[in-house]
Image 1 (cartoon, rainbow, N blue to C red):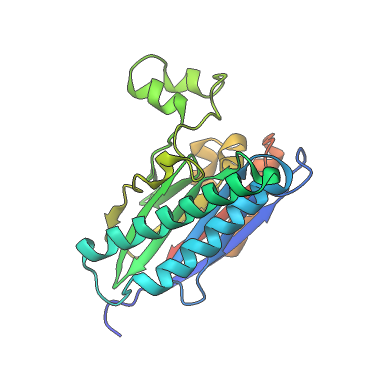
Image 2 (tube, one colour):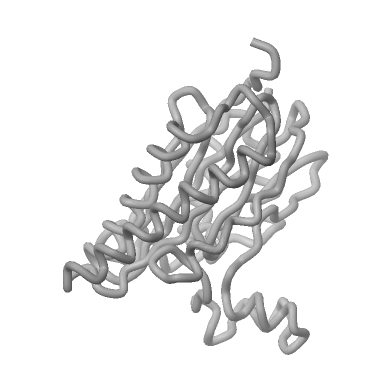
Length: 249
């Protein structure tokens, strides 16, 4: 089939040293049409439930609504945003119905492979990175207060790393703002591209240089995902750590 990308992938998700349970979730479509990472919040079962719901509901909607053989941004972008918005509304509804899930929420990031083109976006502060020609680029934008302060010129990137509002999000699934779109980037992949989708557990323990080196050194995406998670844990990450690595062959 023309336009079918050759992708290889690997994924690892661990609870880490500081949490009792893993509120992260990730999913790889068996046909490599889409990749998802979600990082739940709300404590204990609530965060776990939110990220699980996001993965299940978004997957279900993408399967139904996206024609992965036709790259038409006018069709693809609304279908993706609708899938995420649907998950958001369901998470909000369950949070209102069940007291044990009150205030639960989750981030989500995705890569969707549509007829040889990639759509990349998300809500919250999980991230997607691209390593191309030894250059690392963050493809998603954090919906965090610190990112907003950086953009306003109030604080520097260095200050943001230790800022007290570092983990405070103004947009995530489980709030009205979670349905306002995912700002997808449309990207033509090149042979040798390496992508990483991750929860903030990875970036809490690793800087860009370390990510660049590990992504560049490991030719097997499963080994790369394992090495990134292990290094983030060793680097002092205090969160659940989840990583999906995708190579373009």
